[in-house]
Image 1 (spheres, one colour):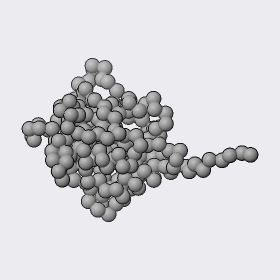
Image 2: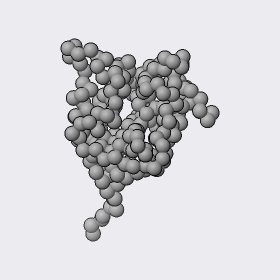
Image 3: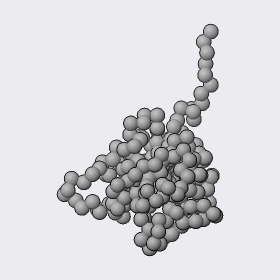
Length: 211
């Protein structure tokens, strides 16, 4: 007798959560990732939230990574070290893409910012569910503002990899220092779906955009 396993389509899809938290905090005088909020370090709050929704997850660290690693409970998340964190967020994206490139079971990455612990559960759930059905970049729209977390399917990784590959020396590494992932996808020819949520975007702990 044939035996059939009751796998749903969702069971066959594996997305990983990536927390971008490699930047410095020059104005704060100490790593922003360790700032206390609700009696826990800022970064630990977002790690807990992401671990609730993803079997596979990673945190990209850079500035003061040894200090941060000693003081944060990363649960099941992998710790990825971005040695080129001073190049900006683009180098952290590159670090994550390199790590997951050979993990064929991963169909897409959902990028979070390490200083936005108050991303609503509704947003994460909606993006996860939509990512199962579509192979487009998914970007939440909070009333009138686009933001994180952002879903990037595997078939679009090469597009980002071309952009984030190591410079040949002809261009200064700082050329991507102010890179904005939202603006990049919206202004490119990539298929993007904006997912509307009727509430304000998650607030950065500090307005310094260094993650």
